[in-house]
Length: 96
Image (tube, rainbow, N blue to C red; front, top):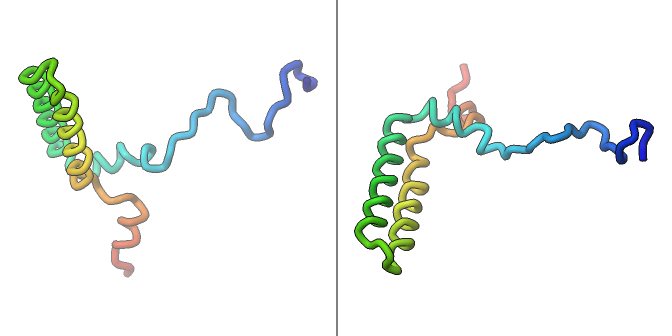
């Protein structure tokens, strides 16, 4: 035990700090600078298609496969509606 009465502390460690990966931290900015309305429309269509698939084939073995297909479609196509990552945008900008 240390002098404070607790277990040994790691220097520089914050209690309860959660590390978030780089892509997750920059996602809101990439959405704002990209095409947010188009991304929202794509998400609404994906959600509606998933719900329609669950309603039309409820209880069938194909239902999870259809929802997985719609989710995969959204994840693969939504990337086009995001702005490029910050360092890519800076590297692509012409220097003066």
